[in-house]
Length: 237
Ligand SMILES: Cc1cc2nc3c(=O)[nH]c(=O)nc-3n(C[C@H](O)[C@H](O)[C@H](O)COP(=O)(O)OP(=O)(O)OC[C@H]3O[C@@H](n4cnc5c(N)ncnc54)[C@H](O)[C@@H]3O)c2cc1C
Image (cartoon, rainbow, N blue to C red; front, side, top):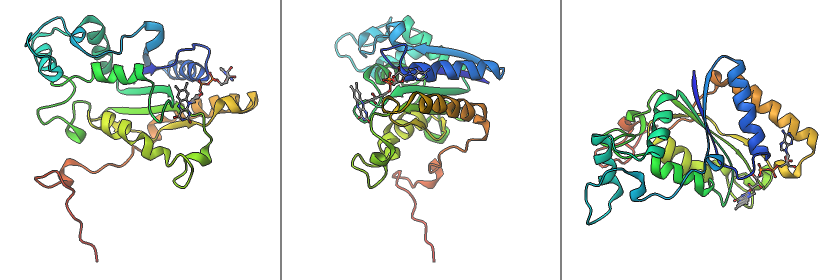
């Protein structure tokens, strides 16, 4: 399997950094091919604008999707975007590794999605969800939190973490076609003992070594929606 690991953490020696290294180790040990995008160490530019392109379709008015369509046809994405697109297209499994920041991913990783998930190349023209460009490929979030597990239960003070992750899992990964595996969540590593953290890394390695057995999150198929993209009502007695 070809695995792309994307890391967003400013500190290389962080627990997220350790999880990233653990994933590299376990996939390499198990004979998989691994590519990485360590966004901070790469100095990845997360700002999405004309710098995404070597070409200009409309010099008067910048509309990102118009320029993305043009760059797809003319092969004129900027070198840093093109390099990430190639890695994304290459992989069978994408893992996004990040600390939960403001109930989401760090801005550098959101910028990676904003710039790399390009119209016409990665989605569009009827290619979305289960008919998406990456249909048949898998993706997974691996993240850490500051808050503890109880805070992120449906009745917890922060609300259900799975609902918080829905915009990423469904709105980004599923949107472009990936089968989305259940997120690996390491709760509150900074507030746990060294032994607990070591055990968490082992739990992560164990999960990754059995990744083929993980069942993707169930989302409705496009055929479950009517002509207005509303879910068809299922009549049950
Ligand atoms: C801008 C911002 C927004 C945030 N928003 C939220 C939010 O919305 N919700 C929320 O819950 N939290 C939030 N947080 C907290 C954040 O999610 C946590 O601080 C983060 O997830 C902890 O992961 P880390 O990798 O940074 O841990 P670190 O603090 O880097 O690491 C924890 C400990 O693990 C140790 N460690 C490193 N490597 C290893 C190893 N190999 N083995 C064992 N131990 C190791 C480190 O030395 C450290 O002691 C936010 C933080 C910031 C900065």
